[in-house]
Length: 253
Image: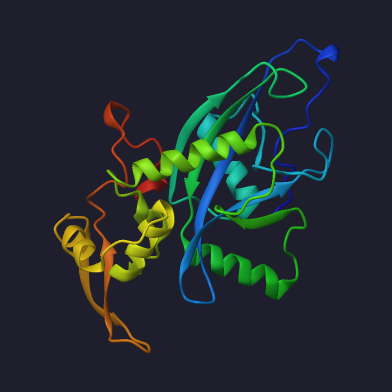
């Protein structure tokens, strides 16, 4: 994992009338808590230069003239987490004139990371003692004040995620290959911030055509729970006439 300075270093508007394009990525994953519940989390990057030196910000940087937008978003995500997204989508373009000290338009993406991959990456860095100094994961429900207009950006990303989880299959982008229905329900509850009736949830997802039951079970202190896997014939989200823009959206391995 490499270090990133989050939002690009912005110049005083008096020195240039050039409009620059930046790409930022809002990255969501899940973290399991000590009481075995789960919460929605995301990585933030502490800025190492002015403006807002020392403040937390979304991962991002300038768009290189040789990069496609989605390639820049994937690069930002990789630099911050060392991982590849299970789902990546363009969110919005933010370009208010006074959003920074120079004229900057930010193309923002939002991404999902599988919780098991994040846990493995964090554990590997902890064991090696090489965790990045300026990257930290925060609960989505308890965030610090952010630099620039990144609080507004994040609120919009959360709104988009909560709306989209209701009519698409993107919740699977936060899960490992095999999961229980209780784990899937936890994803929905973490995103929506509400408790769901387990029996009703089971009936709905079992008739959705998106899950395939396996012959494996998860054992523990409770009754063994059957493991399911995601039906790869069903896209995580419908993209209309554009089709799947990112080949890794349907990746489940």
